[in-house]
Amino acid sequence: MFKRLHTYKLALYITDSLVLFTSAFLALWVRYYSTLWGDSPNEFPTTKLIALACIALISPFVFRELQLYKHRVIFSIFDQIIQLIKGHFYVFLLTVVALFFLREEFIEHSRVNSVLFATISFGLHAFVRLVLMKPLLGKFSKEKTVSRRVIVIGAGNAGEEFVGKVFNDPSLGLKIIGFIDNDSEKSNKRILGIRVLGTIEELDELIELANPDEIFITINSISHSALLDLIQKCSQTGLPVHVFSEHFTVVSNKVSDAEYKDLQGLKVKRADLYKINKKVKMFFDKIFTSIIILVLLPIFLIFAIIIKLTSKGPIFYKTKVIGEAGKPFEWYKFRTMFVDNDNSQHKEFIKKLIKEGGGDSGATKIQNDPRITAIGKFLRKFSLDEFPQLINVMRGEMSLIGPRPCLPWEYELYDDWHKKRFQAIPGMTGLWQVSGRSEVSFNDMVVLDIYYIENFSLWLDLKILFKTIGVVVTGKGGY
Image (cartoon, rainbow, N blue to C red; front, top):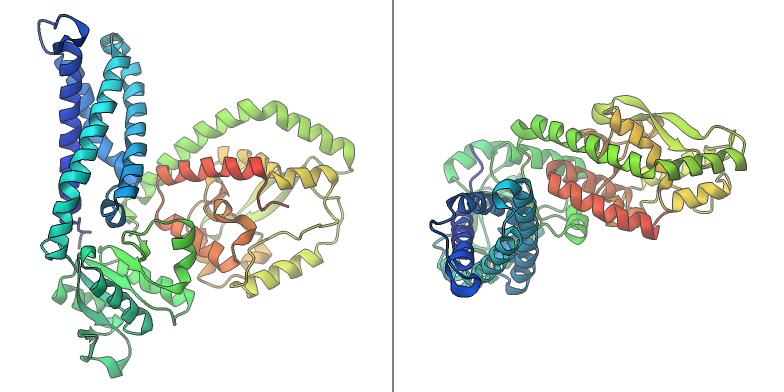
């Protein structure tokens, strides 16, 4: 079964493309046929229109990454304006870059064309989205004309809370067609007027019979492991899966990627695209890593000299760690500790951290650790000790962005659901590092890593990369 696209989203995709194509035509007409710039040419600049039309077709993918097609943004004037500004700024940059590479044909008036296109497209797009489409979609949603058929898994307190929110907000456009729950006493009964259709074991058959558009998992009294297994089972149906559970509160608090307001959704990872995404990711990793090494090599050499002069031992710390699919590899860091130190205290600290995964802190390092050298404190504060891992990135063992690897003895302490974070190639930085770093509990760290794996995109990687720069510069959460 294929993942279905919302009717109104499809309408917005088409409308946005038409708006930008119209804006391209108007921009060229204003530039060449209005009286603002003198005489008009003998013929319409068709080639220029084709180039801008191609950008118009690509732009909805930019808008998609900026969440302009999410329900909670579409029905919020403020959020939509902010995202429209961001979206058209990126489209403007895309236009400038495109016209630069097509300079032989477009060097003349390219700046004026770009500014005109950006200005007209933003104004026309804002008018169509806010004045025309928003009221229309709101009307259709309340009248259930474009409603989405929803199955709710979990008929307990969380399920009742979810149903209450849907009933109280018709603009969500959700039509609940039934519960699924393993409690045999609830079978075929009605809860808040919604019938319990069957059990989770019957999911495939019930999906085929009920023909829903989306699945909402609304369960709190469940283990992380069982919840992840349930999400995986639901994902295999090909339908959009949303999770309304306390276990994923950290995602809604730190990422704000929900499809519907107050209802945190998890996207379905398309397995057929995983290998392609992985290759594209590794390609960009190599490019960015090469640039970083060339730019920062003199600074790395200075750190290496200081480390060598201020304490005995090697410049680099090398050890075996666990990476993708549980496979070990050797990684590199600048040495930040004195040699021959006792790490028993650190081991006990990590064991307690993993065992008490739901605690308030996700710090994986001991504060004021006496084993750390003077230069080591500085390097750790700003995460500069991690930069030798660029070698691992160039070797294909790591990525710039991804879940952090762990030591073999730590891996043995992990629960099975914790190990799901090793389904992707490990990274130098990741979602949890820019979402609170040492302020995030261990279990929440794992949830954020799993969320990243399920929602990987180059756009998400770029956002994490830029946020990491801010974390490194400020040293927030580092010690």
